[in-house]
Length: 531
Image (cartoon, rainbow, N blue to C red; front, side, top):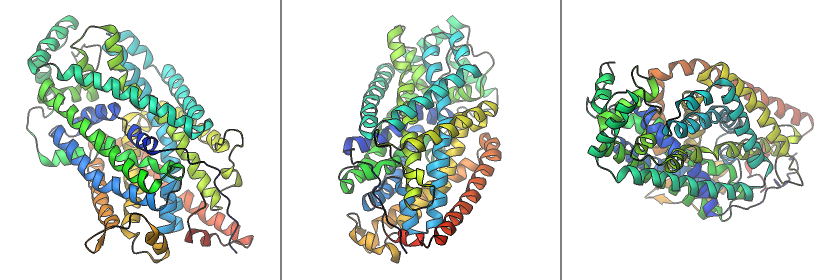
């Protein structure tokens, strides 16, 4: 028999701006611009930053943006990719993929992203102020543990305990602040010429006894690093489809709340695509600043200094597009405002993870693939309180693991976590889009979809899925072939295998348990869960 279904208890409180902001702010804005142009360029020093931004923007809009917009608008339920995969492909695929992408990966983001509040968050501000002693203090393990714990607790309060409307409000405020501070950084940087930068750098280098402009380039060249060896398309595509593309890939998180978005048939597809295009245009502007005002060779050398360090480099800050724009001013207040842009751009990440992971647990519970408390919505806060407490505890254990082994966290662990999503979350979503129009059991959903458009005889969903799949598998190749990430795979691949095996056992255990009660849970996957 089929078991009785209950509504989620969640309320449609998000409009188009909230859906856009969720995707846009999860792209990380200034942080991912910083990461792509430092760590990304460190991995691919022959890449062109402007072209890489354009390629990632177009590729992800035509692929990733349309895939999630079409699937979300057709099946507007929170924890959407679990619903898509379990209804279009197979329940087991939906469960395993959602456990990896919606629970393990999301919780892993809590321990990999929270240390970034310290570095580059606080270190950028203190470095621009010339306070090298404060930079050294905040990067001590004890302080890092304190900040990461407070960051996760902040996420628990403002993402887990508060209703979606209050999450949306703080998200709007942070979006305005992040855009405003980013705009100031770009205005200061772009209002000067290349020669202005060279002169300002040389004056500062003399003050701190560090390399002058050409001296830094020569010193990095002496390390055998390919500075000034030209640009090639393979490196540019590699950069566009890997670290540099973080700002283009992560608007998909709108699916976390798609069941709570008003007019999802319109708002989700508009939000998904625009949350790729807008940061793409801004990233092209960052690339222009770095390659034309600061200079391409110096930018590549700076990426090396940022990631590998360099003896004789004595500046109080690591060189990136934020700190390098800051050398044009000595105004302390302006430097604080400019330096805060990275922290402001990623502050929403912690609450967002507490919006996401508990909803996946709830989706499991509603399909009887988890304990009953997975579906408990607190009557006073209208939130999944028990799920949030569970996520908080596991995330704190992850932070301790990061302090013991740094490859679990920071942008190295984040890159590994991203690749996990490349081969699970994003690949499965692309396959769902490709198969959606042709799978018999989902045909009634496709026929009722507001997005069952075609280009000639081929459904747009299928075309977008193929484009998206090509992006992530090409990017996956470049990730796996990057020597800087080899150490991370030794830890993250076994974790991925372990979660997969555990969830296969989980699925069949709960299916057998339901069968003993006379319930066939497979029947539930022939329809969408109630709202």
